[in-house]
Image (cartoon, rainbow, N blue to C red):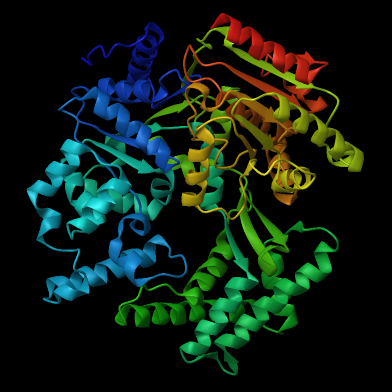
Length: 621
């Protein structure tokens, strides 16, 4: 039996519920408010469900900070029967890769080949091929350090560099003795990487209990992992690479660079003929092939052969880079793979989108994320989040319709949290003119000047943020920018937490989720405009798809993701029974969401209502 770790009654009830349901079904979904102890409930539910079952536990997270939260809970549990390790991809845990490759991004397959080649050379006697791959990787003291200290990925990376051993290979070697692994979603949603990982671990999918942390992210994570694009930037990169490696003749009078030019011209011709003044438009998948065939007088068979030969050339380039000791990445190989995938994509689940982004691109965008998530159904899964409702929408979108579910009611004092909305402003496109922007600016300026609490203002987009910020704010207002590095972002957050600051951020961005602000580190949230999804070709395709499948296109494509964002932002405020916080939504469209946020009330005088709330909160304290 799982011991009583000072659990609250509702936590014990949830653990019992998950335990009983997983005996009958493959999956269970739990919505639990921020601060309710989702991590500990997820861990103890999985541990109890695994008692005498011989299964392994996989805890999937989206961010590093979420991984750290799991580690902290495991350390507090202190169960010696749990042997846990944290793993991330090679790009985060391979010190040699960071030393040798300072430019570009590399896919998992290329890094895997690079690592295998280096390890092979070491085993053949060339110790300099990778000085991190040595006897220490398999030394019992390394595994002992991992299991006893349970370091974060970054902590173990530092340990590895200081002790001249490979962090990635050390964790991989220790896997065989681990019964719990903490890994990123991106690591496991890649089917090939996941299968290699499970092989090293020595478990099948049927032997796993998977905890899906912040599971509301699962649909978007799966869509992004399934989708792929062919851009003129990639074509240009492949063209340059082709010239560097001989520009071979793929077929009579057609060299590799000739094919690149055909592809680039076809994309640009489609943009000229189809997009017009818009940024993007939906097209048919066959449009690429047919337009390229017509423009270059080629048959379908010739087109297919050219792509196949290009793929072979890409393999050759990757091999040549590998021989030189580099990561065997090839733009030619990537381009040819995407072109081959473009021909076989499931047009019931994907949509082709033509866009001006990246100097012109076509994208195979996944409308139905359940396609990628099907392998998860082979394991027992526990879906945990503070924002899953309406849960039936989440379960339908992810393909887990047969799951059991439970919602934990809000358990903190209601008087400690106030959620209000003001109808005097909106960021609705056709009303957000100069006057609309000025009204929103005046409200934000008034509230942030008078309410001297740590405040985050969430904007629906960077464009709205930039427009309002440019109208004039004190120099100490912090801003989440598009290109801010992770280290710069964390430095800014550290300064913000010290108190009395205002931070401008974007809904759905890095600050809106996964960041903890306990106590008075965050007491006031302003939602400056309802964060509706951008009304583009992708969004329209998702709407049409779910309208056809479930007859509820607007609810699935618009309402649900918007509710999730609003709830996530409000959820930043309260972490325990002593925290206080107020959220003010500055958009008249907020009233449409009262069904999902019933505690929300109308404000006629935002500044006065905010001052009254904090004054009353101070009086109670």
